[in-house]
Image (cartoon, rainbow, N blue to C red; front, side, top):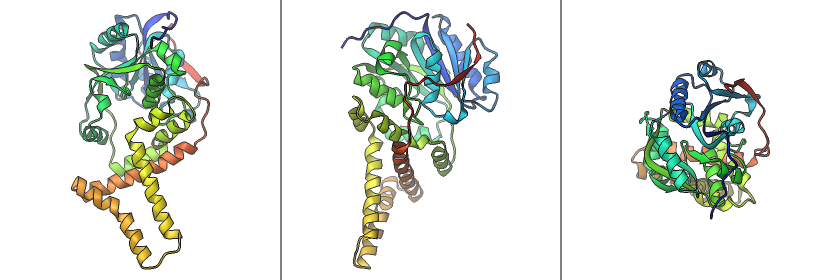
Length: 342
């Protein structure tokens, strides 16, 4: 399917840096983004979610546009990219996290690829992880995620360059309601409109990321709502053309559904009439079975316990996300323009 290009815009590339309290890395992010767009006459936009550290102060030393949420209570992963997109003018838009540094060479190759492949709506590159001991990194390595490999992919996690015409056809850049899975949500909306996504075998960014002890990280994600993202994506996709792509595109969804079924079986044994002690024995057997299985698979009781606890948190987050009220994704986000270079 051929897609019409959008009307001409006043610059070639907009790089949106989404940030919340990234004072340690924001200078690298801004300087690398400015260097990347310099040869194209592009722009850099910092979309800040009301940082309470020196993120905005440090970024203000550079010739970039800085926009900030008007309401800190609206903070979530999905709102930052959309906030930046509201102020972007580029024909192509790149999303960059505040703890990333763009690497030279990627942007010219990505633009050349998209200009010779008009059916491609987004292009990513290889992510160079600087913290190779973090839980996130180790989990990605263990899962061997195919969408991080070079070639055609079903999503562009960790940032990518998107064609404005494709985004406009998909409705919006990023769903302001999502606490995670925002890049996956954009990908399924693009693919539902027959746009393709591609990852080049070119290093695009360095990523430092954040790390925390396992159970502390789970609690942080519960408090922040990050753990609700998949449920929010499901709710937003209900009745829309990309709903099937959501159901088939997230392997974890089947796992969390199985956990919910596990809970239901345990509850039914507990509340329904049963002969005791046989009923208690059956309850205990079903309750410990996942822990035993994961201990055998991981050869570690502590890793097995964390895996099952993590599944339970995420299954609860799935339900919580599906029940959260949502604003229309296309509604304009209230914002304050802190610095405008134009």
